[in-house]
Image (tube, rainbow over all chains, first blue to last red; front, side, top):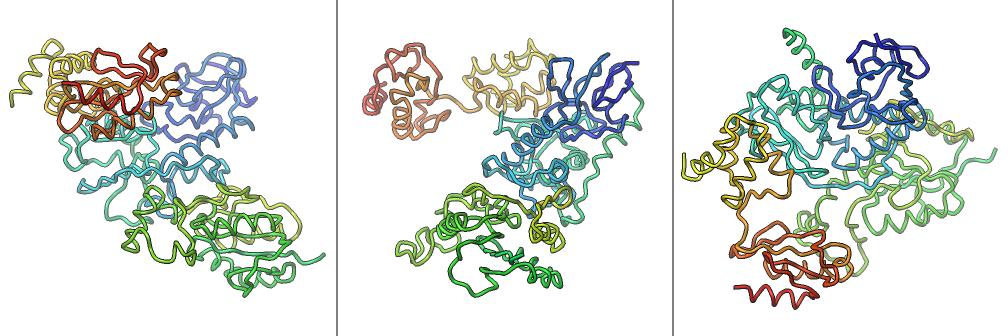
Length: 233
Length: 175
Length: 152
């Protein structure tokens, strides 16, 4: 067992566990967005970052950092709250995350995070890009304007379904989640139509066609349900 | 205690926030005891008065008239509140922001140069619909599309009592 | 199976079944064909055993790779600090207009591909551009247009 401290609380964790897992077991809540149980951690959104006091106050993503003996971790502090809010604002400012006309209004992880982190407005200037919406798939649609590039769909497709249909194209703020060689989703030769990507998506970027906003409730927990039913490698 | 001088303003928005304000129902009686509505779309006043204690502004800054008014209001009001999502984020009016203004006018009026603009009869559409805080400092943000009457009251009542409002959690929900 | 796919498969055969050689394989294809067309992307994915989405990811991440054919000549306009200060942007705008192409695009006649560089290492001549291996310095928009018009 590994001994560490989180917000002054003594916590024990197993070798190989992440700070996030240890915190969760100790009942300490950390905000996450790109993390999804059942998928490999990615450390993409940076919302779960914590401060390791005895590493000179270094900030690390708790979802992707394994615990080490003697770690003294700050999970909640005014500094971290400020940093997390700024990160959240950057996500909101980057594309179109206007809740009032979104299919995921009322059941969106990004919207919930804004409430949790007390984000009452976005101080950064909005970019207002004009990105495509792909409705070529029979059952699902993808609205790139709502995408936060968390990569949960990409990982669900690769790690759980094994189809590897989704990938990232381009770079930086111009990155898009695209199918195969950038083809319309409906033309994909690798997509099985399983819909795991849609269930894993935290926002209204991936959605089911023909469902009203009130019915558009995602079930990201199916990812871990599916993986746990499988024999461990 | 003298009555609080309150104004409400309607920019680029659907007036849903004002409707929600009217939904305060019997709480409006307590509001009327403690405040005087000195300017509002629901009160017939032409000029924004001086010495306003509190102004709630609904809607985004969408045209040259809004811009002009907002700068004036900021000078005259002590507490300025972004009232509802359009004022806080740009919301529905900001849907046009990725498109060039000319394209928007063309789509709506079948001409990029509708009559009346040059003569100053009609305010010019700004290139983008902006949240209030992109133009002037804002003291409080009251999100929601629209904010419910309960949420408005939770925000308004402390101010009427001379206290600081502090919305948190579900009361900050956008949309 | 068309001729291009066959040629690409020939080129990348040494990397058959080696997904980790993706960048190397794409390099080989581009140096042989000049760009990486869709058929080549498919052939690379199939031969190396890499999902098409990953081929696309690598191709679009690195600016070096092209997915459309380059012009017979490549113009690189420098936008480094010195050139920026001395009007590199104006030279670039003039060339965009002259060629009818944006940065990264090729003129309709297929003669020129327009690119930008961050420094060409001859700041004393700013603003500069390169056409293929030749450097042209102390440019202004008019001079740049004339040079381009005189390229055979």
